[in-house]
Amino acid sequence: MIRSLIMIAIAAAAVLVVGAYLAPRGYPMRVLCLILLAASMAQSWNIVGGLANQLSLGHAAYFGIGAYSSTILFIQFGLSPWLGMPAGMVLAALAALLLSRPTMALRGPYFALASLAFAEACRIVANTLSITGGPQGLSVPFVAGGSASPLWAMQFRAAGSFLPLLVGLFAVVFTVFALLSTGRIGLMLRALRENEAASEVAGIDTLRIKLAVAAISAMLAAACGTFYAQFNFFFDPDTVFSATNVSIRMALIAIVGGVGTLAGPLLGALIVLPVEEWLIGHFSDNAAGVAPFLFGTLLVVLVLVRPYGLISLPGLRLLARGAR
Image 1 (cartoon, helix red, strand yellow):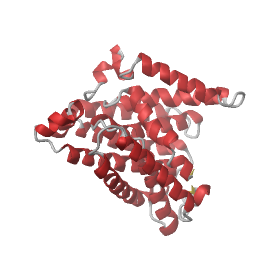
Image 2 (cartoon, rainbow, N blue to C red):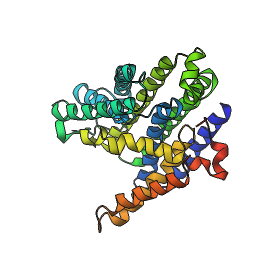
Image 3 (cartoon, rainbow, N blue to C red):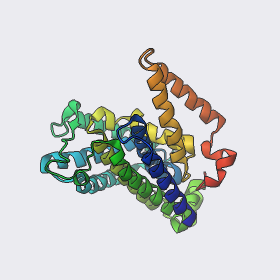
Image 4 (cartoon, rainbow, N blue to C red):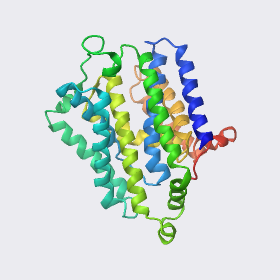
């Protein structure tokens, strides 16, 4: 556990050092912020997908709930996102419990399909409600520097000013993962992942453990949604509730880096985000569709070559945390 916390602290400090040499309003700074956010999102999924071994394809639902909850409270009541974020986390946890209670007890792909359907239902509902802005989405009003301080409003004119907040989010999400993967809870999760039937015979309440992990994972995904909304200032239902751009991306980043490990989501984000941005920047203008095709091809090759993720590379095995 101590080693894990030291690794998290070193990674956070390294990001801050790199950020100090980047232009606050530059494109590299924005990419660095997006890497941190993507790593945090992937780690929130990794808690239920890696530790509890439950394939979730609907984490976009919790992500979107977090984004909409804090933004609606901010627009309608002038409530700071710092206060709206816990409200979204609670709603996401309740949604996860209501969804997981009848589906996690089932075998096979039922939980994955149910989570995917739930996220799609959230997208459809958000597209029809006026309070969510419908298909036009919501724009976060910029009030920092006027009637409110930037920190209170969680709003900054430069991406560089947002970096410390994203580093804090990264540290919290990764610390929660480290806590859950060690100690008594970690042992129960490992037993559940290896053989659920044997775990139940040994007296472990597997359903209760999976429900608790699902709620925690949903809360962290909702927190990431709030940070996404404040960082981008605009979002719509098709963006935050997207299975492809949110749910599958979370899982993909964790799988590329190493599912069920502490460092995996960060490694995956360090590869996926820069490669994707580079391909889009070089191919999207001249040949639309080439960038996604090349990106998908690279990911397929990577997964085939390294089925256990980048964490399985010889020089990175010492970073591995958690059994697969």
